Image (cartoon, rainbow, N blue to C red; front, side, top):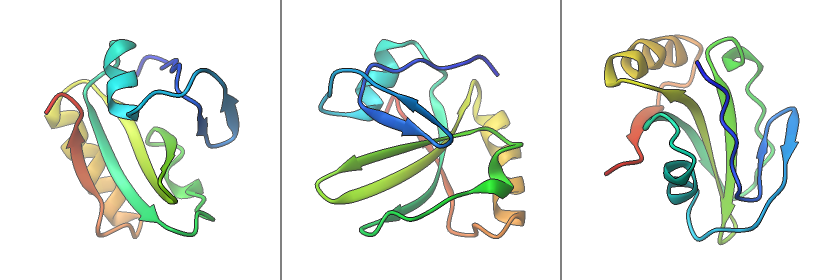
Length: 104
């Protein structure tokens, strides 16, 4: 998995990345030519989530808009890679997780 550098103001859990705000995390990821597949792990109005069980699978992006925080695990080059990771995510207890393709 290649590293992902984003220009949007966001937090990769455990590491801070600063930049200019953009209207959409998905748009920013596309600009960086990142892999298109992510797994949405959670969405919350009260962001206090940490995902230590998922760190071996990928990195977590935290995107907050309009008082709602979305947590994405990624990035995956193919849908097959994302499906394999999704099985591990669900086995870790995040049964509501699902795949997101930012190109759609």
